[in-house]
Length: 175
Image (cartoon, rainbow, N blue to C red; front, side):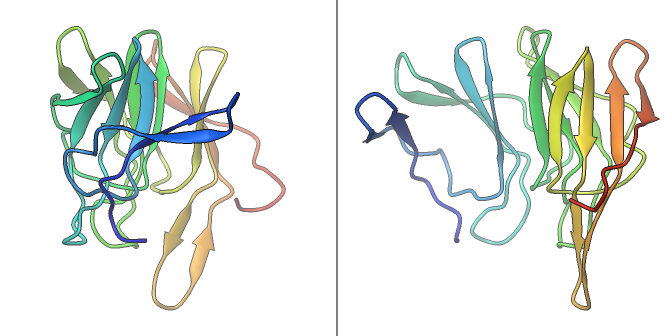
């Protein structure tokens, strides 16, 4: 679907949606993370089909968006999680669907700054990123090109204490 500006909240108890303040610009394939009671929308692809370093912060108390420090390298289809008061963005695509990256960055809201980290060993996008026992675990992913669609079976973990990556057991099939 084309990049959108709509933003809504789902209420589980009433099974209803409520329209919120629209995104500051049309975006698709962006990452979203909750930190300190706010939502951080990072990266994505705009209506011109170009990746973006957008970093907009939604405050549910005021139903408003503000801009924060942009992602150092624009990308979409990235992995995003929060841990220990920071936002981590791993992998993604920098331009075309075959332009995967292993870039890794951490955002500190107290300084409004991004820090570049050791890149993920296997460049990929659209994988699953989670937190487990103090490490960021990125599993699976994809790379698209005109001839084939390739999925990855890599499973790699980043340790913020050592700024290093380790390979973990691979799943039985590419994800």
